[in-house]
Length: 163
Ligand SMILES: Nc1ncnc2c1ncn2[C@@H]1O[C@H](COP(=O)(O)OP(=O)(O)O)[C@@H](O)[C@H]1O
Ligand SMILES: O=C(O)[C@H](O)[C@@H](O)[C@H](O)[C@H](O)COP(=O)(O)O
Image (tube, rainbow, N blue to C red; front, side, top):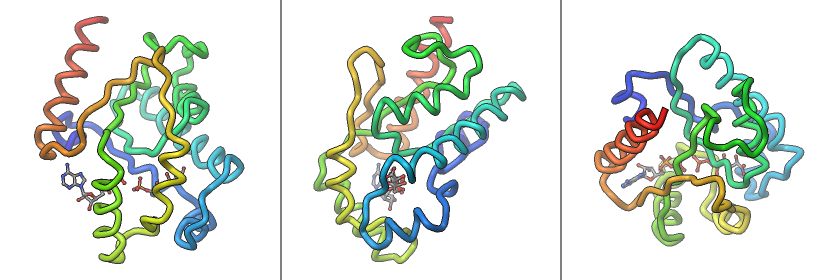
């Protein structure tokens, strides 16, 4: 929905997972850094391709830790580690109580449309870490989808005004 509103490209990060990663998650085994790094590097390469073409991209991704987000930020060839404000890769964190996320994952995996079981949620929440200095905006993910999209569009407008 956000990509449609922006008229831009869209990537769902799960589509970049190897078959081995998907199988591991479907067996309820959390990924480790060795599994994640090639996946994040492939995503970073995709971001860079769009950026170099002067195109905008919306990416939905569980980039749980700053070290993972750093790989995505490095898609910007001018990015200097830690220079979050000038980096052209921006993050928005969708926040919801664990019970809400668990319920949504359950519904989704019961539909048989996704490899991720609800039992993996706790390991994801344990890893999730956002540092204050990254200044990542948080949006309430319990809102209606249209309100979430509108809030992100407002944030993007704010960022554009700063430049
Ligand atoms: N704001 C929302 N309100 C109600 N249901 C939602 C909302 N956002 C996502 N969902 C539902 O939750 C499930 C997981 O959403 P999804 O976009 O696949 O999340 P993620 O990719 O972050 O795990 C989907 O079935 C989706 O329809
Ligand atoms: O780093 C990881 O452990 C995985 O990449 C993992 O985050 C997975 O991709 C999603 O959690 C499942 O997909 P959804 O984001 O669609 O729930």
